[in-house]
Every structure is written in structure tokens, then in C-alpha cells.
Length: 162
Image 1: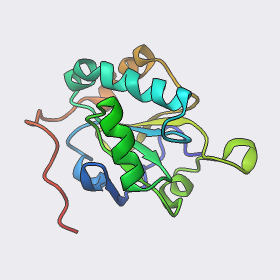
Image 2: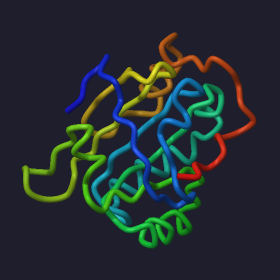
Image 3: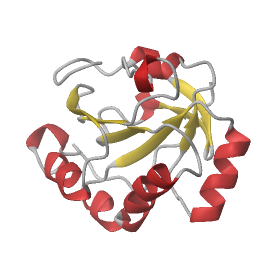
């Protein structure tokens, strides 16, 4: 698993918000990257609902949240629509993003592990933890100098044309 200070691997992938390119946010805002095991499971639903319910706190730090899971965009869209998630859920069907970040699988065999990374505005990992950290813990990291946005934007960057 990548650790604090490592350069965050850039990726381009399809999501519930269209095609996303991590490099669009680097240098613009911190990114909270949430790897979670499976749509519609109680633990994953609770984790992502906590993010949804804390939108104003993430917005205060101009943070972009991206959830990552190996399901399809269609599965993720159904999940996002049911629970009102307004952040992209990225489809990592080939496990390339999970592997790039060194996120393991539960018992080494099954679904991907629950892991949260915070990528600072400088493109380096500022936080890397397995499990489901509290909103307070994540916001605490976002308040650090490494995660300060160099500029405020009116929203996410334009969709990548790649």
C-alpha cells in the first residue's frame, strides 16, 4: 500500500460523473480517494453516506471526493442514485487503480479492502489508512498545510476530453 509522501498514481477512468482524470485536480485541490469493497453493503453504504452528509465540510477545504470500486458504472449509478451521492464513484473493473495504490483484497482473495487516501494539492499522499476513518479524522488532514488549495475554484475542473 502506498504511504505518506509517495506520489499519487494518476488515472483516467469512467465514473458516475463521466470520465475522470485525477491529474485534473492535482495542484487545484486535495483529493479524498475512498476504496470500498462493494455497492449496497451496510458498511460501504454507511461510509459513503457519511461523506455525503459532510459535503459542506469537504467543500470548506475545496476537497474532491472520489470513491473507487471494481463494479460497473451502471451498478455505481444505481447505488449513487439510491443514496444521493453527489461525488463520482469510479469504476475500476480491471483493478488497475487498486493495484496502482497497493490496496489489497480482504483475506487476500475476495473484495478489495476498505482504504482511504488523501492526496495533497502537491500530488503526494498525505494520508493512507485501511478501514473507515471518521469524518473528523479526514477533515483534520484536509486542514493541514499539505492539503491547502492553492486557489479556490467554482467547482470541479472540466471533464477530461481524453
